[in-house]
Length: 415
Image (cartoon, rainbow, N blue to C red; front, side, top):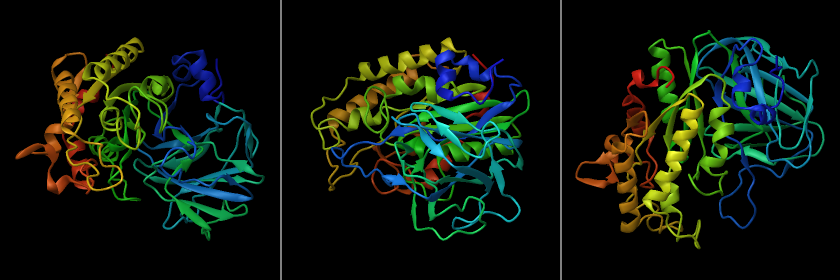
């Protein structure tokens, strides 16, 4: 049998069922952050992370969905070109302002050792840590880097504050951070032991799934509200958020395209049963403006052909896949440097894509987020009470309403 300490990259290479078929078969992802490469200076978005860590501790906060009695960390060097050395790692219950809750600190080991050297292009899963965690807990994961360690793999839009402090402070209850950020470098997953019937729901999307527009440190993304509904309903399910701000179905830039990351982010998730796909608005909005000035808008068919491929691959691996409609975006970034994201021709593409999602019959179900957030008086525009202010991203109230619109019965079972 395969050992779970194999890298995720190696497991994907062996086949997406290798992870789920691991000895014991008892671990399931309860939290995730899709890894992204660090882009170069030719792209306007800031990278949000330091160039490297050196004799520093990084403490990240992650809001899990399903609880358990054992915890494992997934650390990533997926986009690294040299080995990634981690000298020490701890996990605890998160407190306020970078602190951890007293008595909750646990050292993490890797094949019995306090540190690990992760090969380039690989991910590494820690040993199990005996640590009782409740559903919807916030965990603090602390990583110490003793030498100069380049940051090459990160998640851009974390929506939780991460803290950097000098020296080895992985087990300190309180720290004096030298800086903070909302990106999530290196940590890409948290696993827990789980009941035999537990399943994972993977939310596969862009910034709207990633939670842009929601309040930082409040756990108010729509997948977070969905996890709370699932917990309140007593269902043995996790919600694994694989949204990437700026993600596109067909094209790379802020992370690789959906077709390229499907295996890693969705199919390789242990016990994944259902995928919720909400992506495509950036394929429509980015071309012919500063984010992708030389590109031509894709046709609706090109986007839905991409959907078709994602559906085929999900079904080939026994996953159900639900399609979420694209929400309104009239006047997105109007008056700012990103103006041009919206125009009437782009709106026609969104409408055609939504028509396909609703009527093609290819998805195993449809979640009509567009119908939830649009203004009845102007369906091209988001309701004022649901608008975060940029006319693209929903706010906390909208994310809660979106999650509340999902019929939990559609999340059950395999196709």
